Each structure stands twice: as structure tokens, then as C-alpha cells.
Amino acid sequence: MKVLMLSPVHPCPPDRGSKIRIYQSVHRLLQCHEVQGLSFADPSSVSKNGGQPESPVCSAVQAVGRARSQVKATIWSLWSRIPYRSAKFQDPVFQTHLRKIVRTGEFDLVWVHFLNMLPFLQDSTLRRELGETTVILDQHNDMERFWAPNKGHGTYLKRMWAQWNIRQVRQLREKVLHLCDAILSVSEEDAKRTREAAPSDVPVWVVPNGVDLSQFAFGGLSKGGSQSDHILFVGSMDVEMNIDAVTWFAQEILPQIRERVSDATFDIVGRSPTSEVQALGRRDGVHVTGRVDDLQPYYDRASVAVVPSRLGGGTKLKVPEAMAAGVPVVATSTGAQGLDVEDGKHLLIANKAETFANAVVSLLKDPEHRLLLIKTARDLVETRYSWSGIYDDAIARVEALMSRVN
Image (cartoon, rainbow, N blue to C red; front, side, top):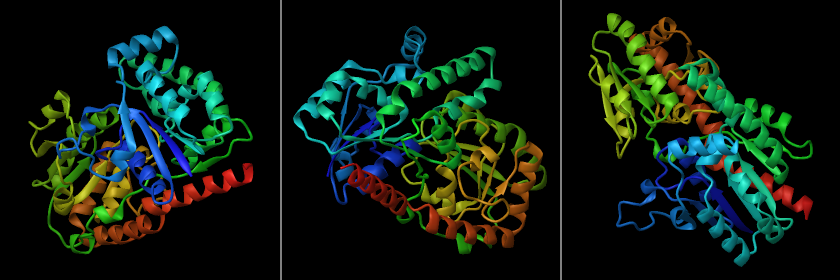
């Protein structure tokens, strides 16, 4: 089977949530199929090895065009009355390359990452060339749920901007979801919302985010007795929901923890920390690393991983990754959403600063409790959240759908 994959970002290097999911989908498709990918150019996609591709996944995806800047995308969104993310990734250079690829190749399947890439397939020339080719939307996090928490958070302009984008996302779904033969959602909550918006004959399947277990050394059994007081957060630090999470934790939760565990430290690990995040590093007990080449040393020394997310939808990859590495997790309900986890069994859930601090302190002071969470969480990711199993199952469902249609 010949697959055309469309993405707003190049999957290499797979150093943040969206790129990891894209990378894994291409990686699993390449096991049995031919994949030709097209993404927007991203300076971070150039490998360290003289710009040479680092893996078959990297060489399978061609990067062209440029996403609009934040200011230009905002202006274009308002002018064109389309969602911000759609405005950001609307580019004639990309459209031209896509037409050329479709004209010269005979594809059996188009795999589209993110709702904002579907409008490219509205092009009449492409529709004629593709004919009855099967189209799959891998929507990652639901765009409406992404904006929803911002309606009541931040400045007046931010709240209005969120409401504007929600309206435009709803209109976009009405215009483009009929192009799909099936839709993949990362959680049942996202799937339910998508089923309400999609045509009744378009199936919506839950294909959760996962983890590559081979990349995380499991040191969990030894961590149960560790006396380390290191607390860890991992995430891209130029993303608003992560900025809000670490700011809330550093300012309101960590001081309460240090009142009872004076040596407790908080490591903020992730690429592109903003000036606001860097400023947190001047607070007692807070360390901001920026991008690191290897997360394993930070997981090795951490006693607790925290996901104090208050914004954003979908699922957070940082939760199953910490579980795979054998680090017990404390998260908000938002941080744990979309995962089949049970509070007190796989992780601890707390939504207020005081209860969140209490949960972290309880784990720092109780090795047996840490060990219990570590064991059950690792079992969960091995059975439910391995990328290989997740995407192999999804691809099998797509193949079955195509066989019925054909």
C-alpha cells in the first residue's frame, strides 16, 4: 500500500508530543507499506549529522514551505475567519508541492495529521487526482478542547481569542470532516465530541498517545527506596499550557512542599524556555535546564514527576513516559485526562495547590507508596500504551476499512 502522509511539522527529531505521535505513525506504517510524507519546514528538523536523515522516518518525509509567524497567523485568522492554527499553516508553496506529489504518485491512503491540514484536500485539483483514495484524519488533541480552558483564563483579550477560535474550529469541522473516511482521536472524550460533529457514516476510533518502552530504562523498583527529593516536569517550555503549569507549581505548590521537605527541588526540563520560565529558575529550589539531549538522567534522579496542567485538551505524553521510566506521577485531572488511569492506583490526582502539595509530600516521604504506584503504572503502559501496539492496531483497522470499501 502506498501512503501519503501530511503534517504541519516534520517528525524529526521526535522531541515533543505532536512530533512523537507523527514519528510513531510513520515508523509503524513503514514496517509494511510505502510512505511519502509532506510537512512544513522546521529548523529543528535538521539532524545533527550534517543535515543527513537520522532514520527511515526522517527520509520518508519531505519538508517544504514555511508556517506563518504568530503575528501574521493571527492577522490572517481574523481576516479570513479561520482558526489560528489553520491560518498558521496555509501556504501556497506547500499546496503546490502537494499537487505535484499527488499528480505523480498513485496513493491508496492519505493519512492527515491535525484538523488544520484537512483544508488542503478541499483543492478541486487534488480531489480529482485522489478520486476515491481513503483519507484518515489523525487529529491528535481536539482543537476545540484545546481552546476551551482559555475561555475563562488569562486576560480579556486571551479569553476573547479563545472564544473566537472555538467558533472557527466548529465551522471548519462542518466544512472538512466529510472528506474523511475515518478519524482517530486520542481519548474517548475527544472521540465523543468528534462524533457529534462528524458525518454519521464516518467512524471515529480512539487511538491513544503512547510511549516507546525501549527508550526508557525502567529503574522503578530501585526508586521505591530512593531518598531523592527531586521533583520533575518535562515538556516544551514555549507552550502556554506548560508555562502555566510550571508557573503555578513553582509559585504556589513548591513553597508548600519545601515547608515540609526542605531539600525538595523542582527540575523544569524542556526545550525553548520563555523568559517567564527562565525567571522561575531564580526561585529557591527551581532549576530550568532548557533542551537536553537525554532525559534519562533526569528520570533516574527524580522521585516524583508532576503534571500540574490546568490548560489544554487531549492527553499528555509526559504521563505515560514518566510511568515507563518508573517515576510516580502526581497530576491534575487535566494532566491525566484521556488516559485509562485510576487515582491512587496508577498515579495521584489533585487539582488544588494545597492537595497537590500534599500528594507530592506523601510520595517523597513514603517509599512503599511510591513503589506501589511505580509497579501498577509500569504494568499499565506495557499493556495499554506501547506505541507499537497502539499504531499496529490502528493500521489494521484502517486496512480492514479499506478492504470493505474496495
